[in-house]
Image 1 (cartoon, rainbow, N blue to C red):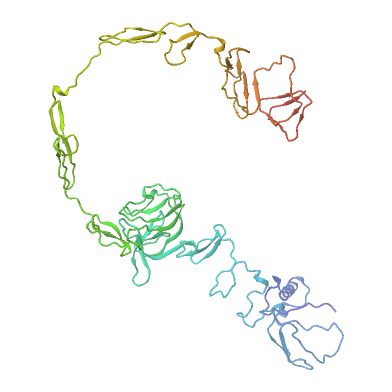
Image 2: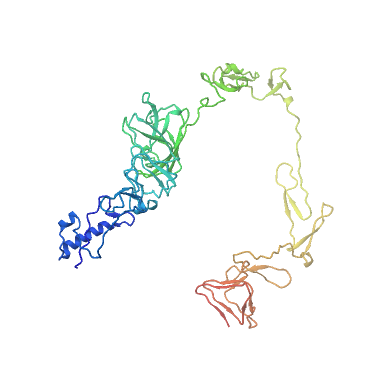
Length: 582
């Protein structure tokens, strides 16, 4: 008999087109589509598409003949159960139960009860979106690289570049590095712009909501606690947002140009109580001194970064536990009270310190005083009174028993005078004297008598016991030369000029060559000459190189061989140089 087509019904709706175990088309749908292909395009087929809609037509028997007496069905390991079997004549076998996951089922009678993943370890899940509700009891979440994540409100990611957890804050304008930044939430009582750097201060509260109001700082703030932080996002008037109270604000202008200043990296920035702007110039008392942080990247056009760390400064008696000030008065002093146990302000009078109200000056009668007394401020001036010319001090001789007096000078006050009538001059015999003696006025002149050249002093050795004499110089008078220090110079790295003598005996005179014709370098042992002449006709060199040497560029080496190089010794020949052994 001719073969009949293997007709299949349209698979049940619970049979997926894709087999979740293989990721390919399921077996049932494959057979169905294959039959459609055969029926539609193979030709010569007696079964029409209408037959497919009502099930397969009766098929002729292709085997032997017999009678079925009992038919039963078993669910096996599929998780399904059967009832109504066995059928011995006629009847219905009913299938019930839930098909196991291992057999292509969901393992559940409801969608909610079906396993989340029908393949091992969620291997097919590469991304998720649209999740709602809570995620229950995960033991951990391993985040991947999120350095390129786009900021959005409510988004969380990890940056492997900075090693920080990041949260998208507010309206998607703020990235918070978890554990590295702190913010204050509030309402803008005036418009706030985050760039260039803008300091924000506390202006009030929003009723009983527990939310503060803040605005850009203005001139004249006197409360150290008023400064909140630095703007981290722009806020329109009456909008809600956040201000950074600690941490780093990025992507803002921090070069100081907007405030007429030039800022650099690591500049401390202060609140300017005169203008209300940020400044890198520390304010002066009595203004408050509040440092808001440091410039960590001085940049223009929104390329800078700023580290916020509010240092509110201090006010004497403000937060000090050992200082308590009352109402302050001009010229109050700070004093410590042992009974109270703290420092407090006190007046001059309470400390036993008086005020000078009048200062006068009294001087002896020979002097007068002006400007006395001084009752507030001024200068006391003492002046000597006018005295007659050629007056003498008359007393008292000491102390202050009586006022000093003066009297006129008399002849009795002039001492007796004696006069010189004649002055002479005597000198040793080696000298002559002219103009002696002088009886009224004149000049005494001493001159050395003529002596032979190269004569030496012959006596006396000291004193004036005999007239000094001179004698001719002899060789015995020339002392042995000595006293020069000789050292073995092996370190000087510059060229030296060798010394020569003019004689081989007798008096020596040292000379040296004042040019580079002959030079010696102690640090290397090199002797340099314009020409080396061997008067005996032989140039001598050792037959072994015992010290490492470098033939410098521009020089060549020549050795009479054979020549060996000792162990551990290196001869370096510079580029363009040669070493010839002959």
